Amino acid sequence: DAKTTQPNSMESNEEEPVHLPCNHSTISGTDYIHWYRQLPSQGPEYVIHGLTSNVNNRMASLAIAEDRKSSTLILHRATLRDAAVYYCILMNNNAGNMLTFGGGTRLMVKP
Amino acid sequence: DSGVTQTPKHLITATGQRVTLRCSPRSGDLSVYWYQQSLDQGLQFLIQYYNGEERAKGNILERFSAQQFPDLHSELNLSSLELGDSALYFCASSEFGVYGYTFGSGTRLTVV
Image (cartoon, rainbow over all chains, first blue to last red; front, side, top):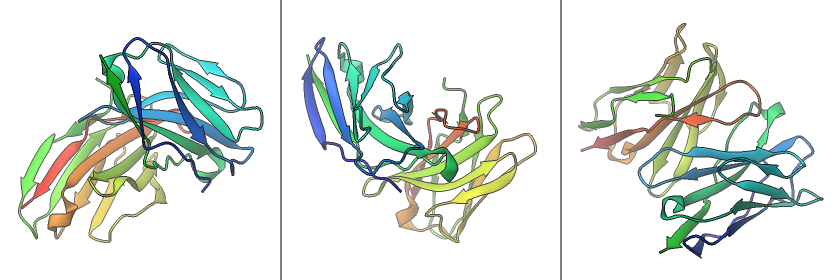
């Protein structure tokens, strides 16, 4: 499986933008980049996904490097409710749509 | 409410016992996935079903089994329970394809 590398933890101030990086240098052409987050005591929650182009939705934006070897999840204005573990995952449709979770990045938001 | 329902929310049982965890997927989703999350292991994929058929297996112990029924709900059976089986068990569902998964809120199993 293609792997991802994320920082163990990051800190942000409330109402400021947050850029969460992810490296996936062994990504294949058919791998989609997915982001999930897990709030304390809850199940993981889908955030966003993309293949080659940048993507925006109501929760976040996903910026994908031109060579696809890295991506960045952007939270435009962090709130205290965004404090969670954020997982960057590669999903390959040819491999049965498996989500394999790594350690993720623990985001702490300071008021 | 994510649309994926897991029952029970909490379960306390003794070593050596057997339990069944239940999952109802989001309406229209044919795929069901089971994950185990313990403190020292993170989220581990156990097994996937698609429209009643087993699709993929991960790190699932032989003491564990699962099935998906014609109405698409799924059950995870855990037997001969050990202290180390204490964990959160999550179910997720998805349409087939590279769309997102929807997770339930989990069942917290405590083996004493």
